[in-house]
Length: 241
Image (tube, rainbow, N blue to C red; front, side, top):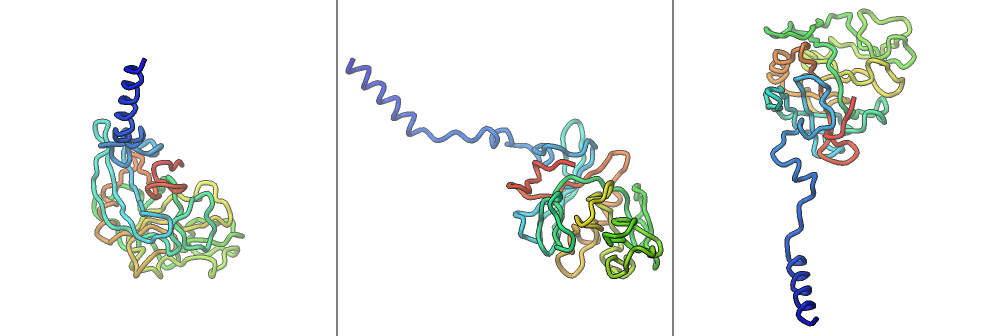
């Protein structure tokens, strides 16, 4: 009996001194790319990830990916900027807060003051002096591009796109609050060229990177953009459309 007790105590000591096993989730993630760790990537074979280290920061990294032979392969990566108010869950965002909405979104079309870069495959809309993005919550054109400002869309509640000569040289519309706009949640969220500093809620990158992304994106491959942080309520791995 004494021998058995001694052996049991020895076994307990060995177990207690052994290093703790890594969490199953961490072990499962080993060697996986960011898209492979995500709950949803939009169903296509192209994906852009825009990630900040935590919700309150205004800088991070944007990477674009191709799905090849069942794996996600990095096609390019660049420093990115976010809203002056940081990042917030897209379903909880409020207009006028200069926050970038986290989530997974499609990319309806490209646009720009300058001509489309050679090789652009996404539908491209040129900005004119009459181009506005209506952000007036009382307008029937809320969160839509309009040529000429409608009577029910106030200029001081909208954005005259030609005024942003640098930022809107080239861009992509992000499908946030776009298909069925919710008033007060926000309008005019784009991926565009960097300005002087943080954005008013968009994601921005250097001009050269924006051109590369436009020539890379292919609507036949259903590209999406995922915006988020490594963990918490805004985790990019948990985003859904």
